[in-house]
Length: 444
Image (cartoon, rainbow, N blue to C red; front, side, top):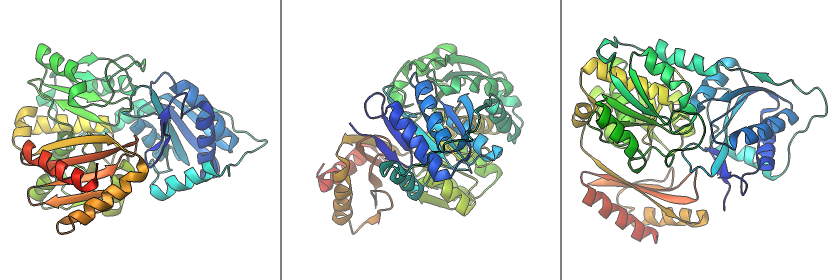
């Protein structure tokens, strides 16, 4: 059993590797790292969230922070609140797409960004070495803010760039998996003029299916789109930072297409650089090439993508897991931004999702994961780099190898004790063959 610590924060299994004491001490370590000041605290709907938020609140207060509790919110909501509210930082209690037994703490800096690798290591070092700050008086009173979600919705609406008349009245099915997206996403869709059919829309944290918004977990959504004759189906993960899409025929189009469609719309309005991680589809490169703009590739993790976006002035970015970052709204993945951009693309083109997807290049991506001790993964990645040194190799995050007929990326997961191997090619057979070549070279 492992407590996962890195750029995605801290994640563990509740009651085993992640206890109230661990949450308190990590939050106090983060408060120590910040040196006090105002901190926004939110959580998703997992049943353990209230307990862990109370522990985190105690740790932050003990370190001299002034905590404002936002309650149940999406991760992009708290990121926006931190950035716009002048907070020193933020803490979100969530394990994002991890299974129900998990929870975690996601840290945000004063810009609303997740800490980069160096900052994450510094926070972990304070925790591990017990170099935490503990004040003895002048404790700041707790405050509450229950309007952050409403402000998030208003910001997304204010950023709409086109006439949405063509999509007003469209039937939309939304699966919020009883997570944080239940609370504010319906208001956004209503304001955009859509007729909502809401699946799993109670913020109970009792997930109706496995939380990751991938094909095998969204059969209910696909069936509901077909049954209702909806124009589109959307699926969120528990903390509302990822969005998957089902087309008007009830077909899951693949999580890689969320960023691709959002990028297609944004570049059509505001051409500029794009950022994506090393495991994201080449669809983004093909779209960027249409508009003559560069793509900046980064290690996996929204913190890495967001920092690259700031450095290169990117107009859009994200990850191929359904994570879209619109820097105008929040410096993290945001399902509300993604949803709005896709609906705006439908409105401007007059095309349904299936046609929009058909207009893009056809690639096949296969994602695999294997249980593997973390200490073995670095050696496996190095072995792959050595075996294919004659190809184009990128070792910024594990090892990515670009072959003439596709690419493969082998890396350690930031959120689970596994190794991920992702391949993309023009056919499933080629993608599988590339994965097997890399697995053999890695000895996995």
